[in-house]
Length: 162
Ligand code: ZN
Image (cartoon, helix red, strand yellow):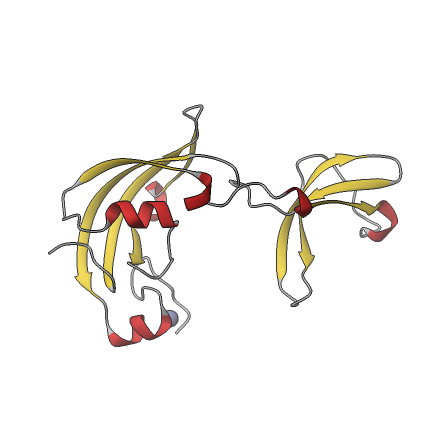
């Protein structure tokens, strides 16, 4: 069986940046299960896994455009300190949640703090990074109709919202 669209794929992976620092790995949570071809994982990694079989190991470098995107300077903006919660003592690197116009909470990071304002950055934490994955394919199975309808994996390692 080979990895193709609509298959449930189980992988173990390590993600490093250009400096070789580990950014993420599946380790404690067990294998990662995803639905292939549905954008559950970054595009560059999904493309590299297509056609692979159980037991295959691969090293994949993913450019930002096929990863978490390039950094967007328009997502960096200043907010007056008086607009922040009163009990918040802003610090560089702190993560906050902001409400988008659609009412969703989006994570933002504090880049700098001045007397009057804070500079916030709504880029994805890994935007602009080239992603270096080491991946091993542990399992491949057909998806269920319900998984296909939802666009994600159910059961162990998947979503548990049912
Ligand atoms: Zn579901």
